[in-house]
Amino acid sequence: MEKNLLTAIDFVASLPMSQQNNIKKHDDQETFAAMKDQLIQRKKLHYRCRHVTDSMCLIAVFGLVLMIIDTEMRLNEIETIIIVIIRPLIGVSTAILVGLVFYYHSLNMRLYAINNHIADWRVTITISTIAIILFEALVCAIHPFPYKNKGLSIFTLFNKSAWIQMFLTLPMFARLYLVARSVTLHSPLVNAASSRTIGYLNRVPITISFILRALLQTYPAGSWTCVMVITLLIATWALRACEAAMWLPKISVSPQPNDSTSTFSSAVWLTIVTFTTVGYGDVTPRTYCGQGVSTITAFFGVFASAVLIAVFTNKIALNRSEQSVLDFVNQINRARAYREKTVRIIQYSFRAWFLKRNGHRYRATFNSLYRLHSALEDSREIKQEQRNAVNGTESLLTMLNDVHDEQRNNDKSLTKLKNHIVHLEEKINGLENKLDVIVNMLSKNSPST
Image (cartoon, rainbow, N blue to C red):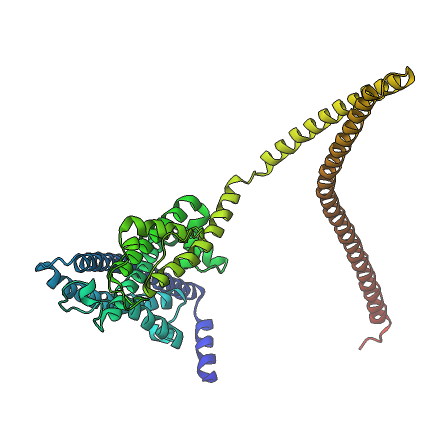
């Protein structure tokens, strides 16, 4: 092997310079052609992933709409031919959706292989990848079984499959994660080549988490409002369906639906009260299903309130210029107030001294002394505020001075190091000259041969 390699190297070295340049140019052209093919293939795979995700999102929303229509018709005991074909349509859409899930992940693995210069995309298949694909397929596969059942109220209260229908209906809202994926793939951060290049250079992967956090950072009010409104609508409908259908009732001896929460308006009120963690107690869920929905709504409400407070705090925060203007105005106002209090202290002191010296009545002297002490207390508070403001400014100035001193010390150290290097170079040059002199002397003194 080494002999063949050396032979090839000797052969290339023996070629003329023009032929070597032609070979190098040909290799560069092949490299650029391979890179171009990879970029074209990557672009095609990205567009295909985006189209597949859009199709999955539309099919998931279509299945959710059919599920809501089917549930409402069964709650209201509407018997038409439509109710017979809705659940088979849900099953067909679910089968297509599960197939698209596997197809999307195969495209995504090929795209990952191209981005990381992997020859065979099957190398990217790991246990965690398989687990994620199977979990996503399971989430998209959950749907109510297609069979004919007349109503979901008291007719199905004692039906053994009522709780199964509940567990197969409400989890279909988990398919809405496909909306977030579609928004991610349509984001300019993913489609723009400049943002992807900057992300690769800085080793920042453009993932769904990064896109959603960037969207929340850029449009905090609008994006979080949409999330909360959608969550409230889903929780309201789920609570109303649980209470109206009496799925998993707490009191099995009472087969009647909960009239207080079976209406949409009452469910909206209970959801809002639970979401804001107020809990008046005038309306309560009577079913285990309703209690579960209320618990999830309460947990999400606490999280949403914390995020909303953070967003609101960020919105009302002043920038550096505005904060400087506000501090300057407050400083002027405090200085003016301190001067006014100082003038009043002088006035009340002179008045109290005058009244006490001339023997006026005690009440007038006491009022003057009271006003004097009040002015003194106010002046002390204003002076303390001024000191606190000055301390804050001094801390910033101290930090800047420390940075400046550190930079100046670094400059001095660098100058000393440069001087040492110059000194060493001079010594080395001197030694070199001395060695040259010694060599010349030895060459002259050596006997000629």
